[in-house]
Structure formats: C-alpha cells, structure tokens
Image (tube, rainbow, N blue to C red):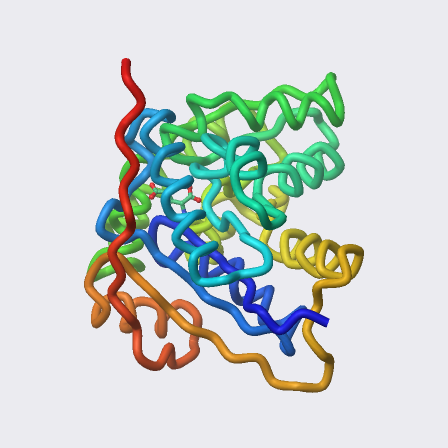
Length: 273
Ligand code: DGL
C-alpha cells in the first residue's frame, strides 16, 4: 500500500476531463492537480519549449512526493512523454496512445480526423501511433489554435466557440472521416458542440476513461495503490490566478475545488540552440 497522491498536470483546466475519470475509477486515491496556467497555451509553442515546461512541471510534482504522474495534456505528451519517463523516478502515464488505438479500432472507412493543438499536429505522433495499430488508416489533421483560449476564456460555450468548432470541423467533414480524435484534453469540455456539428454518424474519440484505466492498472501492477474503502482527497495548484482557476474548474468539473494554491515552478535553462 502506498498513501502518496497521484500527480496530474495540464497547461490549464483541460486535464480536469482526465481527472474526472480518475476520481470515478479510483475514488480512494489522493490527487494533486497542477495547471500551468501562467504559461498557457502550450499549443502554439515550439515542441522543445513545451518539453522543457513538461519536465519542469513533472519535477515540481515529484517534489510534492507523488507516486505517479499523469500527463493530462496531449501537447505535453506529444512533446515529452519519453523524456518524462526517462527523467522522473516515478511512473508516467500519457494520453495519446489510448486515443490512437481507439480511433484505429473505431474507423470503418479508414479515414480518421485529428483535432489538436498546433504543436501536437506538428509532432506527427498521432499519425505514427494510429498507423502502428493499422497501417491502412489515413489521418487527416487540423490544428485548432482558437479553441484552448476560448475554453479558458469568459464565454466557453458562446458564438465564437461554435464558429471556431465549425471552422475546424469543415475540412474533416469534406474529407469524409467517420472518426474524429479530440486530441486535446480541453476539447471534451465541448463534446456536445462537436457531436452536434459532426452528427451522430461520426465517432468522437478521447482518452480520459482509457487513461484512468491505465493509471489503475499501473498502480495495481506496481503495488502502489492506496487502501480501498477510504475517500480520497484532492488538491489543486496553479501557476496562474487561483480564483479564476477555481471558478472555471468548478464549472467544468462540477465539483467545488476548495482552496486553489498558487505555485511557482523552478525553471530550467532553455537548451542551447
Ligand atoms: N490540454 C492541452 C492539450 O491537451 C492544451 C494545450 C494548450 O495549452 O494549448 O493539448
């Protein structure tokens, strides 16, 4: 038995979609969630910079004595999963692999759409992973730079968001995809909007549930789970404004977050060019 908490991070509140599934699957575990809101969005940044941020946040969680780190951010997973696994002493679970697998299984016409941040699309990781499962599948990728700032903004379900979703859905509808990966942990917050715009015949894929299952399996196999039957506690940290994190987080998670703490992250020097 291991009473240490699970660490979960994202650039903002998107990772709460993953946290929700962790709370459902592992209600007896304690969790520390860290949103790197001061540096959000990660999506428009070069992969090298996102990798540095991810390693800094991973170390910050390790300093808080977590027993496992969940990278609840597709951009950070695409940029840095292998490096995080190599550099951190605790196991690290990311979010791309389960979605790629589910999409390869779900498609019937072998045409899969990907909606993700610019950095995730630029990494090419989804194409590699989908095609590792089924080399016959074509992945059509669309970067969505407007969505994360809108979801974190003051009117996440407003006209501008509907308009932005329509704009990114257009090329995928034209390409005739039957499966769409919501390849950013912020996007499932807009799931009803996506489903209305794509229609029922398109399968939407996202990884929160699958990721929580992988966390549960990792804890079990490594024998680092907490005692069953207890009620876990959760703690929220942000590098940004705690009040706005608490408000946005409560709305999306439908859970009072309690006191959100502001933290600073020790920054590593950027790698020499
Ligand atoms: N939730 C992050 C992801 O999954 C958002 C990235 C961003 O900050 O742009 O990619």
